[in-house]
Figure (cartoon, rainbow, N blue to C red):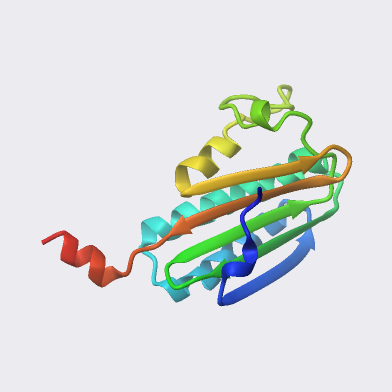
Length: 155
């Protein structure tokens, strides 16, 4: 079951071309949206990296760098970010295998096969849904703790 994006009080949806230049756009947009939760710089970097990996996977694997559309959705609750990256490309035949570290469908390139591993490492939850020939949706969730709570627990 893919994470329900309708839980947020605040939501955005952005559709953009699947070209490498738009990876930076996705990173900037998610960072600006996330600032409402007052994340630390490390948390902000983690989310930007996870989004970057998901968008890059769509550009390279879903569309084989031939273009298409990517839809990024995001929602905020009081303390959590939900992000989805969806493409309408070739889909993933074996999601479990694709999520294995170092697995790549492009061994002839310099791809490390670590995209899903980074997404899992930087976010609290990762879910992937895919249909061959239809596309893939990657959903990620990250919880944030207010600065006061964090500072109080450090005393």
